[in-house]
Amino acid sequence: MVDYTQLIAAARAAHARAYAPYSGFNVGAALLTTDGRIYQGCNIENAAYPVCLCAERAALGAAWSAGERSFAALAVIADTERPVPPCGMCRQFLLELMPDTPVVLANLRGDQLVTSPRELLPDGFAPADLLDKPKA
Image (cartoon, rainbow, N blue to C red; front, side, top):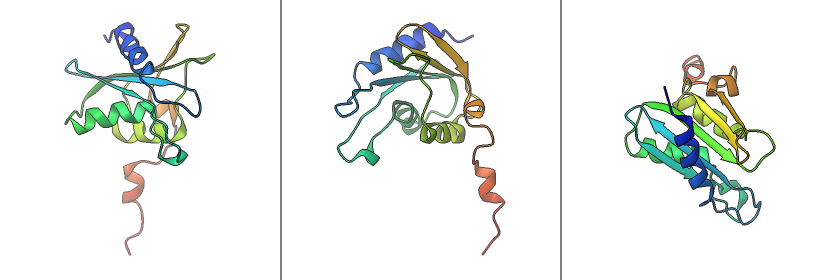
């Protein structure tokens, strides 16, 4: 059983390191591997808005770059009324690399919702969809 309390605390610590001078909307994430390592990520904005990096993709990118391929849970936190939902781009990213991993959505008030990438993006575009395309 995953200790979501510890994972959410790591996401909250990442939240404090976010760089969000344009939106003022800090987001933190923490990804737990099956062998107990935690990779943190925070959102990093940029004056050229499309180049911004979300916390979820930052954490998963750090873990993947370090060679990790097996994940136990991801926690995402922000100062929102409800547990913070990932954006569409993050949902697609998570679906591709960790489709069945539990995702704990949280807010700074302590509300939590446990879901998964498959639940967050039902019928999402997947690698198998590329295999079904006609060959040129």
